[in-house]
Image (tube, rainbow, N blue to C red; front, side, top):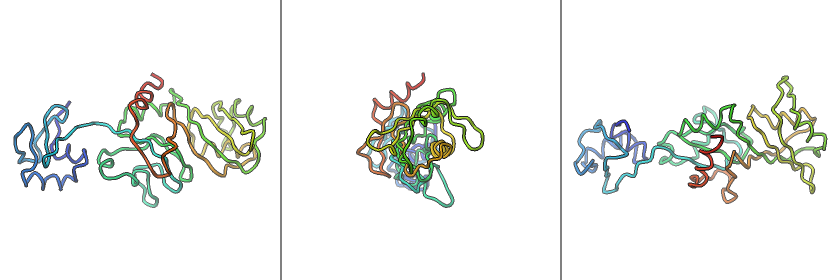
Amino acid sequence: MAQERIDKVLSNMGFGSRKEIKEKIKKKVVTVKGEVVTDPGMKVDPESDEIVIEGEEVIYRKFIYLMMNKPQGVVSATFDNHDQTVIDLLPFDYKAFDPAPVGRLDKDTVGLLLITNDGELNHKLLSPKNHVDKIYYAYLKEDAKDEDIRAFEKGIVLGDGYKCMPAGLTISEEDRKEVHVTLREGKFHQVKRMFHARNNEVTYLQRISFGPLRLDENLEEGDFRELTEEELLALTNEKN
C-alpha cells in the first residue's frame, strides 16, 4: 500500500481531527514501530507499520460498509445546504472515512440504504449494466389491479415518455393497497411515477432489499450497523 501521512491515517481512523492528531503528536503519545512520532507529516504504511496512539494499537481498515434504515425527511447525500443528510446521522468515527450512500432514496422514502467509502463497489452496484434488483414495499391510495402486474412486466411508460425496464409487482391478498415492487433500475421518484402512470398514488414507500441485502428488522429508522462478513461477501459477489 502507498504510504500516507500519519496525521491523515489517524484522522481517517477516527482518532480525532487533523488538528487534534497534531496536538497528540506534540504530547508524544503516538508511536510507529516503537519510535515516538514528532512529525505529523511522517509517512507510514498503515497496513504493515505498528502504530500506537495513547497506548492503543491502531487496527487499520481501508473501507467501511454500513446498512442504514433511512428515516423520512433525511436526504441521501453527503452534504446538503438545507436538509439533514444520512451522513449527518453517523458518529465521527464513521464520518472520518468520508463515506457516501450507494445510490439514493427519496427524502420521504424510508428503508435500506448502503453507505460505504468503497468507490469501486459503489460504482459496480450502480452501473446500469449490472441491474441490481431492489425491492420496495409500497402502500397505495387505491387498490392495485391485476392489470397493473402485466403493465409493470411490460414496462411502464412514465409521464416524460421514458419507458421503464420490466419490473415485478406483487399485490397482497389481504389488502390490495399493499404491494411489493422489484426494480432493476433507479430513476428519480420511479416507483411513485410508475403508479402515477397507472392513475394511482403511493402514500408510503420503504426499500426492503438491495441486491442480496435485506433490511435488518431490528434497525429502527435512523439506525445503522456494519455489514456482516456474509452480507459483504454476497454483495461483492453480486453480478461478478
